[in-house]
Image (cartoon, rainbow, N blue to C red; front, side, top):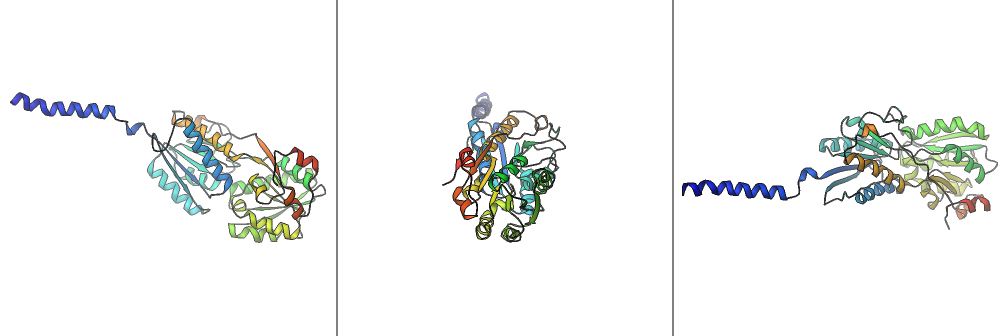
Length: 324
């Protein structure tokens, strides 16, 4: 009886250990936390591209991936709170979409891998020191705009344009960098820049109104405040007969005359590939910051008429997407 008594707990222990070995190990589950400064179609497309690339690589929420997404709703203070929350949870990778969210996350952690996306100038935003592999915990994908091509597009929409208005958020590093680049590039195109700042989303329409009578065309960069309140710009443009050219192709559906921009869903996939490589063991500091070179031209002839211009047939024919 004594011998039998001793064997019983040992047998139970062996069975328990065998059960643990046979069960899926929680340690093998990966975790990805995603945050965005605001929800609008371009940034949402990045988020969806990341998620779909993870799934294509075999990382599925509820199976072998813990996935979380939070939006800061345009508030930088909230972005910092989300960053601190994520750092406390210590996921395998944090994906930060748009500059303010990326800056918040990078400021909060120096060891958790951070992959930024839809950040125009990661060097100006001080996320990395150069476009080369950082040697830190940070890497990502830029949505750097082809400004020279945008200026050419402005000339194709308004051949005699001399004064170009730009609406931007002075608190967003990317937008400030774009404005500085525009100032340098404009003289070669025979144009000058007229600035209108919009510190908050609610300021965008009034910033557009301030350009009336001062500009021949309005340029809308990939600024999160601008894109979140883009309809306010379109309303002013239609009333004042000022055409709007944008850097985000989604803006054409919303009333821009034309846009030359990136496919943000593709940027999301590109970002997702980096995340997958990190989940599989690659160090973020060995991955150089990336850009996308695939641009699409979208035009909206009906919006052009409402804003006082007629698009040339050559421009319409060269577009990948013509909004009816």
